[in-house]
Image (cartoon, rainbow, N blue to C red; front, top):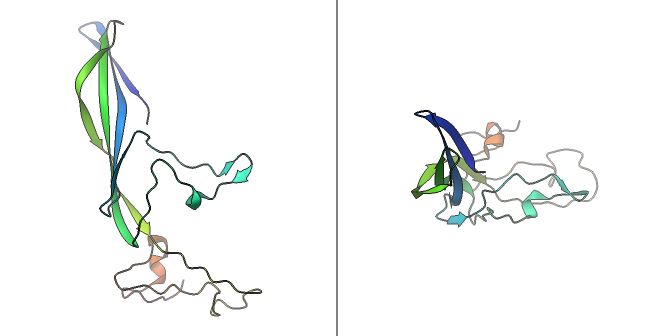
Length: 157
């Protein structure tokens, strides 16, 4: 998030107002909070010719969940401002403003790997993309929700 500037004419005089994001207050929905001075950004697909494994990279806004589930994630940005009239010096506006971003959701799952030798001949064989067994209280990620019934039983695609 960058500095934002507003240019207006008030009573025939040019007035500029600019606001700077100062802090980013993260609520990860699992009882954890963090304050950063970095808003974060999408990770690149590659770096110096190498593919970036995005799940293995820590960022200023990273968070490690210790439980599975869906968690409401929120972000509040604190802005400070200043103004100037007629191209004069910038004057600090006392105080700050907190702006809440649209809420989001983190859908956290455990990953289980199954190593097999050779190719899978059928998806019903052990280790060949079979269904995930849901633990009590778990629900499938939204992208797979249509593959499970209301009781968490796998019904396929």
